Every structure is written in structure tokens, then in C-alpha cells.
Amino acid sequence: MRFVDFLRATVLLSAGAATALAAISVLAFGTHSEAHLVPIAVGWWVIAALLGLRLGRRAETNPPIARLLASAKASTTMPEHQPNAILINRLWPLIVFVLAAGGLAFLAPQVPGIAAGFAIIWALAWRQQDSAVRAIEERDGVCFYVRRTSPVRPIALERTPGFKALRPERANGAIS
Image (cartoon, rainbow, N blue to C red; front, top):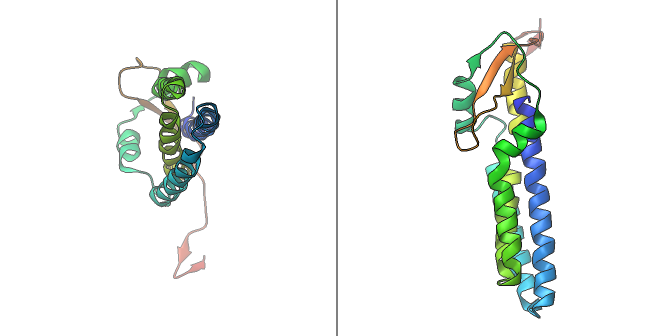
């Protein structure tokens, strides 16, 4: 699976997790007759959205992703194409997070509301990383792929030859 696709899928799945947790928390607030907690949860979600937007406003790669790209192993062959297995293998903590927070809604309805805020921050903070990695791929003429590793080991990438984007060079602001 290409790393840019993995990043995009991570952002979309995190946003979906935030939506599901928000819906669960609102339903739990209604079930437990704690409607007074809804404005507090919505306030937390707004704060989380603002924090996520602030964290994700940079167009360059985050330092952890830059280190991951720099440590990618060079390969001349295409890796196996198993996107579902790689997503489950790498995003199992998100699945556990959503199931645990959603399951606790019956005991404490505020738990999925708080968890939804953290999923919002995560999704918004990582929203531009795929385009930053794609720009590096175009500049260097490579493609980064997620290697299938153990679910408890750090993520690893493979770097394969790709297509380099040829753009006219700028000299003193003018295209030559």
C-alpha cells in the first residue's frame, strides 16, 4: 500500500471514528438523562477542532514522518498489494480505542465524548501529511510503500523508483 494512501485512509478513518464516537456519546447522554453534558461535549469538540487545525496547518512533513521517509529501505520491486491487511495491521490501536470508548458509553457517557475530541485532533493534525509526502515523491522520483510488519513493531517503509516531476526552474521569480 502506498504511504500517501495509508496517510489519507488514516485521516478518513480517524474522522469516521470521531463521528461515530460523537454519535454514541450524544445517544448515551440522552439515554442516561444527562442532556446537560451535550454543550460541554460540543465545546470540547470545537476546542479539539481548533487545536487540530492549528497542529495540522503546516505544509511540510512532521518530524516523525520525515524520519520514517529517511529510513525507508530501497527496493527495485513492487511490494505485495494488501491494503486491507496493512490498514488493520497498522491501525489496530484506533479500532481498540473506538471499541473501548464506545463500550464505556453505557457506564460513563462522557468517555466517548472525550475520545471523539481526541480523534478530531488526530484527524485534523494529520490532514496535510499525504500531500507533503506526495510532493517529496514527485521531487525525488520515488514511491514510498508501507511494508507489512508485526502489529507491535514500528511502521516501516520501502522506497521504489517512481516518476520524477519535471517543472520549469524559476530564475529571479520568472520561469526560464
